[in-house]
Length: 127
Image 1 (cartoon, rainbow, N blue to C red):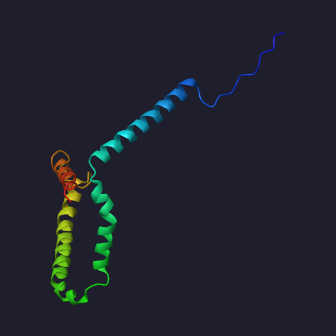
Image 2: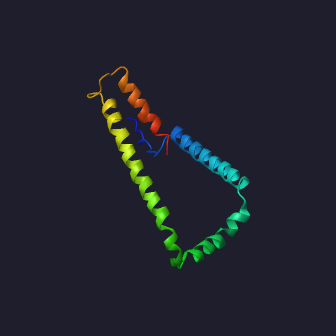
Image 3: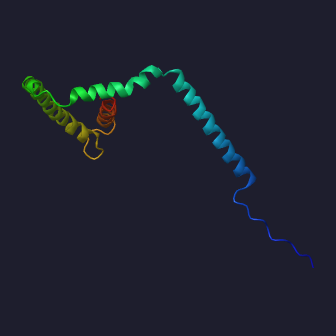
C-alpha cells in the first residue's frame, strides 16, 4: 500500500502569478512614463506660485465690493433671458425630434427616424 501525500494548496497557479507580476510591472512602467511626460510639460514656477495667486484672488473676492452691484443687474438680466430663451428653443426643437426618433411614433422608419437620430447624436457634440 502506497501512501500519497495530500496535494499542496496554492493560492495562485504559476501562470496567474506571472500574469499578475507582469500586470503590476506594466502599471508601474505606465506610471513612470506618465510622470516623466507630466514633468516634461509642467512649468514648475507656476506650480510653486499657485498658492500665492489663489490667496491674491481670494483676498480680492472678500469682502465683496457692493458698490459694483448696480452695474451687474443688466448683464444678469441678459444672462437670465438668454438661458430662458435657449431652454425654450431647445424644448421646441427637442420634442418634435424625439417623436420622430421614437420607433413607435415616427412616420417613416427608413428615412425620418435615422435623420432624427442623426440630429440627436450630432447635437451631443455641441456644448
